[in-house]
Amino acid sequence: MMAMLHHCSIPLARVAVRPSPRTRAAISFATASSPRATPQSQVLLGLSENDLQKLAIDFGQQGFRGKQLYHLIYKRKVRDIQEFVQVPLAFRNELEEAGWKVGRSPIFNKVVATDGTIKLLLKLEDNRLIETVGIPVEDDKGSVRLTACVSSQVGCPLRCSFCATGKGGFSRNLRSHEIVEQVLAIEEVFKRRVSNVVFMGMGEPMLNLKAVLEAHHCLNKDIQIGQRMMTISTVGVPNTIKKLASHKLQSTLAVSLHAPNQKLRETIVPSAKSYPLDALMKDCKEYFQETNRRVSFEYALLAGINDSVDNAVELAKLLHEYGSGYHVNLIPFNPIEGSEFRRPYRKAVQAFVNALESAKITTSVRQTRGLDANAACGQLRNNFQKNPLVTDSDNLESQLPNMDLAVTSLMKR
Image (cartoon, rainbow, N blue to C red; front, side):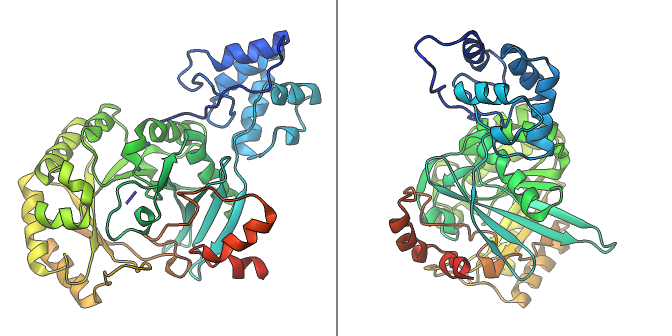
């Protein structure tokens, strides 16, 4: 379904021909060897508290100003440097003159589903739109868990046949701060902390592994979401599961399987042709051995395609062949425009569950959330993931009716 550490980085602009000492200090900081501040970086979001303290000192400020920046960015979620009112105006101006910015994108639109799920469209700096989803779930005790489903790419190049994102085309990888900011935007809209993060939005995380890992680090260390509360999803990209295993994260790896054999999988997941099922399963087995973290397998149920009891029996046999302790998360197909696939009947879903459980495979069925807002699994897509949004106000209105979100009617309310 959907893609990972190209950090918050862009070239320092607006530097004068003869930069001031403080501007030179900012340039020096941006090109330092810190793993959280790559060359070209001028985005504050994604920097650690220590990095921000160093930045403040390089600008001739006391170190505590960096702590203030940290609090304003991650706790107060302030979007613009000039809104850092606790920070001296001169320091704010110097940051902006050196090309620094917070790194937050405006919310272009939001769609609210009847079940409380909210899908946000964020307008990136290059005027492309990405989608992120906030999913509130209330447990039996009345407490609410808020899950952020974040995108890792603008679109997706893998073009899985049942997924809307791939049908909309692919533009580029997201930078790490563009992943992190999705969580902050959801917290801002819901006015509560995000408790869980799933890298299951637009894109294939493993094709953007560097940015995803850096975003994961920031979400864990700076936004303070536990590693075990995060899930990284992949349809399978050769050599990347081994790379992920080497980091020994405590997060869940979710592999989008969707078929119990290679032949069927290639018809559903075109990229499977370059990553045979046996090789994928071997990598998953080694991932478990390396990390001691069980792998979860996502399986989209497509009526009449991969939802038979025989398919379930074959799937159970495949999983047992490569170890034990696996978990299967079944996802009844969520309808998308232009797809020939159908959602299976509940009876067929339950029969599939029964067949897996009788073979001692731990199984769950994902509850569909956000269906009426096109925010459910496999439904994320917009017309501006491939081509940027035209910013001219006259052209903007003509583009809105083409969006898959009924944005026009929303804006007229």
